[in-house]
Image (cartoon, rainbow, N blue to C red; front, side, top):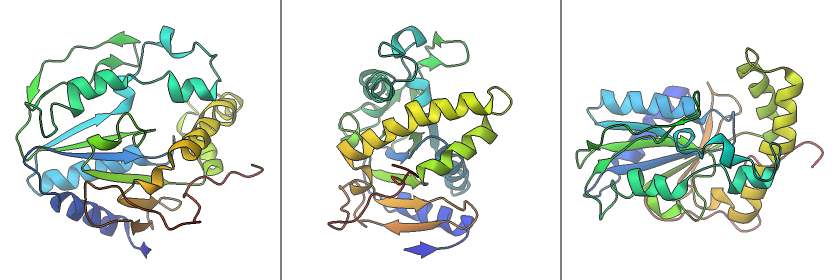
Amino acid sequence: MVRGTRDELLERLAEAVGSVAVAHPTRVAVDGPPAAGKTTLADELAVVLREQGRDVIRATVDDFLYPRAQRYPRGEYSAEGCYYDTHDYDTLNRVLLDPLGPDGDRRFRHAIYDRATDAALSPPVTTAPANAVLVFDGVFLLRPELIDRWELRVFVSVPLEKTVDRAVLRERSVSTRAEVERRWWERYIPSQQLYFATVRPTRHANIVVHNDEPELPVWETARPSWGQPACQPAGSTPPGTGVAGS
């Protein structure tokens, strides 16, 4: 493991992106639990890559949700519903990830859904340069439906109980503490535990970022050969799975 500054982490991630040698856009997954800091990290990485002259496509799994009427067949607080019923992976692959992949034509859409209005989106099709970088953040990105779509896989790890406090701060203007805590303890944290148990995402990550202290992160490179599954030592515990009282 390496402990360093935020800038050193971003430099390492940008170096990893630059090490990918493919004839199509490089697709980077920034996975992790809700409120782990993956969106902020992805935004900062995009800035660094643009400063290096790369054409960056910035997108998020939150723009590939099913409409609200379809997302809760198992109930608003169902962990299984969060994992199985929330995101439209078929459309994500069809309009974004596959067009940017080795057999794609690089003509893509970066979003299909507006969460604020609960409405479908149909942005114009854009053609990416062959050397572009897709920086894509979200939950559950290393699950079977998506795992082979990434050239570089980053997992942002934070103890799950710590994400509750972060979420309370993040959502204090729109939700009460009780509302946030209920969502996290009943829906989001159990859905992450389901993900860890069934997929073991850190086994597939090329770089795991321990983001307990965002300004002094710790990271580990699981495998230097980008685009291939990473391996976790036998018997080790996936980062970010510990929950007080679990």
